[in-house]
Amino acid sequence: MICASDDVLWLSASPSLQLFDLSLLNYLNQSVPIQIWEYEQTEDEACSLDVAVELLHHYLKARNRPIHLIGHSTSGLIGLIYARRYPHKVSSLGLLAVGLPSAINWQAHYYTHLSAFSWSRKQILTQMVGDMLGEQNQYINQRFVSYFEKDLALSPSPHSLFSTTNLSDGGVEVPLLLCSSKTDFVVSPIVMRPWLKFLKKGDQLLEFKEGRHFFHHFYPEQVGEKILNFWLSLHSRQAILTFKF
Image (cartoon, rainbow, N blue to C red; front, side):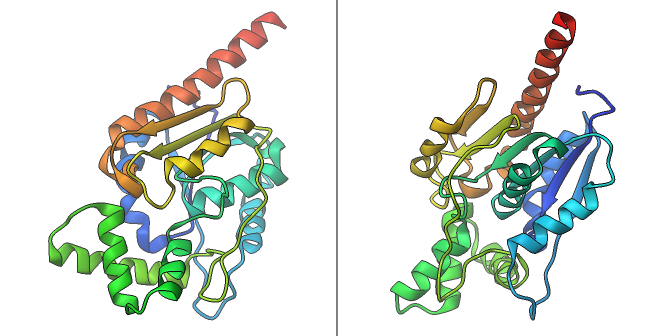
């Protein structure tokens, strides 16, 4: 277990997709209290990662010690930008399904499909839900489609039908954990590979065999165990440094 004085903050910028995070959060919460930071924009609000990052900073700036940040996809991207701007506020950064270029997410694929094919919005979403979650029955797939429709409107994704955005590549100063799935077509192994040139000593890049884009939902115990072990490794290194000092 990591020290009680160390806080963990799960970043959630996709409220309509939060149900896919719950199994992992429940597993982690058995070992360490997990706080959740939520961001939800209005439908009339311009998409802005900068606004989300600065609101996160407003939430954390009064803290007198750094915190472990962790998030999936766009939520993880917010954590990545924050850790680059305010590394002194971050104990470690955990990124699930965040590749390089880091702005790649399911919405980038959605808008690419929408502009390239004559399919309807519903047809593309239905196909993508199946690809991201695997084969489900028709009722479950249709229910999930509505969740992803809401995510298009309410998450601060930087993409639209008119353009998809790329952010600058690069690493972070803080300890970094990267998790992905071999069967994820959104953030494929190909876009995880560029991270290798930015890894520092102690950083970890973990690839799970199954689970597609929401591997942490389907395999919460396996993913959670790796996350907890990463945090433990940070404490082990800190203990050694303290002893040497």
